[in-house]
Length: 336
Image (tube, rainbow, N blue to C red):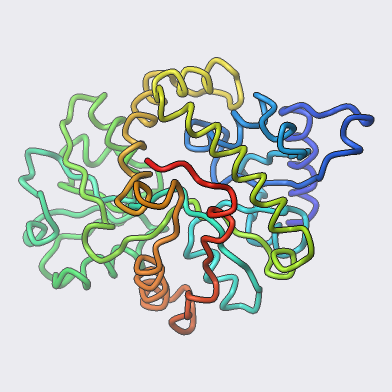
């Protein structure tokens, strides 16, 4: 069923993002990238590079698949339906734990945007402040909520925990809970503040749970195949060119995405907020020294340990042979 759903989505995406003529496409190397999220500013690099012809300039015919219902990035890359997948690193590691063989070639975020969001008037500014407070834990994030508390020396008995739905901000707005986890730094805080409640955003990455969200990965056999590294380097070079325009003007980048109609229902103010906030999560000392999307071995060790503790993998995977910065080096990733 997943194969048929993904094929249907692939057809829709190809139509939505346009395509090259049969004649011009014959001379280009074809590849498919499946995004980690819907086509919004988070995925600006691939979208803008496609629309501006940067992929064609690199000799590539790229099909861009937005995330959505029926889209399983790990399964699509494993089955050969997609060349490059973009998804949370824990899911890639879970796939490897189940027997898949992947190579991770880039990571969009240097600091995870996954966060705990608190009412500012709760006084919670760090995990230790949760003692005696009311914490809403999303049902789908229960394992990570437990892990976050445990890593920060907080007993579940010392916190009043309420299970909440995946998109429920009503309880924190109504002052029924003080904090909620997990949230996305660019999403729920903005929605909550729009309803008149100032927030404090606490990145779980600052407290033992960092990861390079939106990791770019490929099948390991494809990675080692003749000519593949050159194709991947050309892909990343084109995407980096797009990201350079984003860093030059994040507000304009958000407006481009909204006005382009790549996803229905995008709010321009929210996308501008997202775009401007996203900058700080994409850059670090490593990106300033080596280039955008640089993979940090220390973060990957941390991620592998947390994946095991959360029950996503059966063992702590050795990430050293899984991640590589070779493609980013070949692409001469811009430094920010």
